[in-house]
Image (spheres, rainbow over the protein chains, first blue to last red):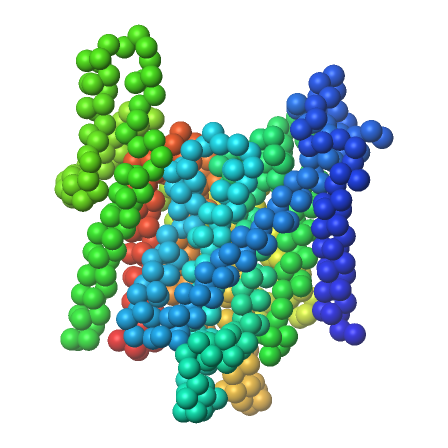
Length: 271
Length: 289
């Protein structure tokens, strides 16, 4: 077994472990993410609180587990949304060609030209900021999903165009195969590996973007935890030096993103 | 010469079309955003009806989108982008004060990140063995896994300059791209033939790898502009650098829609201009024009 394959297996196990831990947060920790222990704010790690508590006396371990759940469930959801948009638009541009192709590609170019973070914060600012925590979570990841498609679109468009010009599609067309049948029986199955790769690439990008947005106070709002707003704890330098447990969200986030990078399917895997 | 001129004119026209379309999109977003034209002072029971009417008149609420956009575009042509709702100052004035700060940070960051990424990728190609390659890949992979805001915090603790933080965020992306580009070029048959003939590696690098890759590298330079402006937002906000990145963050936090939308539009235009210039130069170098 090659080193790369072994690394992938380890990374997959780690990701599964972290995911299961986050899903079973209620069973692993007795505290809710919002429960306060007002008598022990900024506490150091102890038996009751393995990572200590934050400035409001909330258990950091519980918040980390619940925050992992939010980030690890919603980043793939946003990635799925952006991949679906990229698949639909890129597929349409590649299959239809002509003005459709030009219009869709121009739209993608325009979206790619703007710095993503500027557009993200502009759109986030258009929505009211004082919304319920759950709404802020959904809004953040929905915006990520709705804005993250342009780079994937280019890849899907190029793949669809290649398929459109292929011999087997020409044969299908000449035998009287209808457009819908061609899309679902010929094009889509051949696009699947590309769509899967784009989906997988988008997940760590969205995790990192959410972290940055939440650290700036424009993402998931308190008391709902996410890796981003847990990382805001690092801004308090004195608390960080007294409790290294505050680095746990950063370690977890970095580990997960590295695992995603390792598992990412290579060109050979996609055939 | 004619093709060269036609391409240039086409690019300028597309930039103008983008300005009009982008402006319309921005105006639509501002006009139809929740709470448009509502001032919380209107809820103050101590204010009389004339005072409330005066506050309302200050917001220039237009019923139609087209009229609103017409007014907005007319003012923008004169360099008047409106007034910031949170800072109560003209947006053009705020831009004039802060733009040079960001431009300086971003320019220095692009130069630093490019120099480091290019130098390391070149060294890796010329002298690096598998260990050097692996170390570079691991370091860049680790840096790619850190959110930009965490890198900004690290630079706050270290009291290091802002441009360096932007460069650190950009470096791994540039390094990976340049490294892959050089690796791909070195697998070309003519490079393998040159190696087999015993031509020195630096000569192969300059004549057979760098020269064909120059056009792509120049195109990447344009993308770096967009990347660096995007990175400037969290870095300037957290490092307290008074540039337009910090201004954008402030505008978003205070829901100052005219300011944030205008900033986004202006930054988009700058990055599109940079991209177009880089793309045009790249085509000139590759001989497509």
